[in-house]
Amino acid sequence: MDRLSLLYLLLLTSLLSSAVATVDSLDEDPLIREVVDDAEDHLLNAEHHFTLFKSKYGKTYASQEEHDFRFRIFKANLRRAKRHQLLDPSAVHGVTKFSDLTPSEFRRQFLGLKKLHLPSDAQKAPILPTNNLPTDFDWRDHGAVTAVKDQGSCGSCWSFSTTGALEGAHYLETGELVSLSEQQLVDCDHECDPEEYGACDSGCNGGLMTSAFEYTLKVGGLEREEDYPYTGTDRGPCKFDKSKIVASVSNFSVVSLDEDQIAANLVKNGPLAVGINAVFMQTYIGGVSCPYICSRHLDHGVLLVGYGSAGYAPIRFKEKPYWIIKNSWGEKWGENGYYKICRGRNICGVDSMVSTVAAMRTTAD
Ligand SMILES: *[C@@H]1O[C@H](CO)[C@@H](O)[C@H](O)[C@H]1NC(C)=O
Image 1 (cartoon, rainbow, N blue to C red):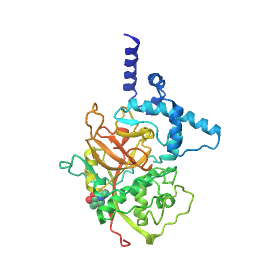
Image 2 (tube, rainbow, N blue to C red):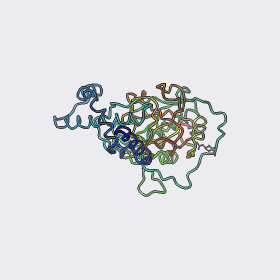
Image 3 (cartoon, rainbow, N blue to C red):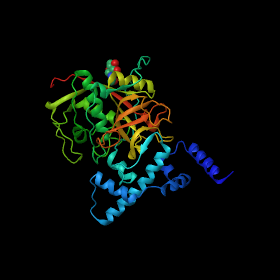
Image 4 (cartoon, rainbow, N blue to C red):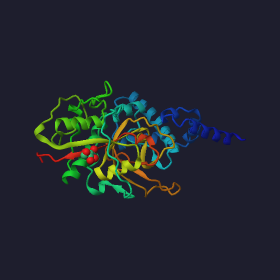
């Protein structure tokens, strides 16, 4: 057996045997690094890419040291994008606005989903019929989704997932699409997970959508985005004004792991709040993300708005069904702010933490 096929065999064995490993630990795998290092020689001129990156995202660094430090991270992220490309060939990975951040800076500043410990008495969504589900469905085509927002450098993803789901439910209930306030949740919601000591919604330091629904139910509702605008920091006092409530929660529940049930709840109740592992999202440019291996450790809260099967490029990848995910990193990230991830095997844990909310008509309308 020549060296190359041996290497290939070893790589395959290591890929299969580490199916439970996280991608971050895979990054450290010497075999993968070896394969990637080859490609690294062809990594076009990192300096040139860094110049483009700085101008595209308006990046300036305070000192030469900082600049050089960020350039080193940028090069590491180019290699990381290359690895992600190998592991996730149906998506495109490359330079994003996060390319000068280390993985831990990225997690701390742009994610923010706390560990979910579902209370045993969490209301479970009733099982819905799944026989007449449309093959493709997108709530954006039905006017239930507001424009893509940007959480900035604050671990408040959970609040955007929460408002997104309630915006959809409110639209279904009232026919009116109203953008809702994340800042109210960031400043005022310190609701705790009843089962887990210390797991409380805490502004830029993370939270959970189910606790945020609970908070919203308790205080009566959320204000409009304009009335309580987003600042991206959690140092301010709570300025919630009950008289400005525009959308209220009637009830919410947790959807089972079954993908048909998830689709049925999506179509019936509107966009769903979901948790996901965001490791491939740091380098995602577009396409359908379908990594061979992805951790199911949930660290990011997003909004499931639809699903589809067509338009799965390139040709050599068979058409596969995917979920359409609204993210909260602005419109310049991903596909105009959206992410596509394949359906079928709970990739990156996308099916593991799904919740649905119903809105109530409010008098303040
Ligand atoms: C709200 O409660 C009703 C009645 O129990 C139930 O049919 C519906 O599925 C619930 N909706 C959500 C989103 O949990």
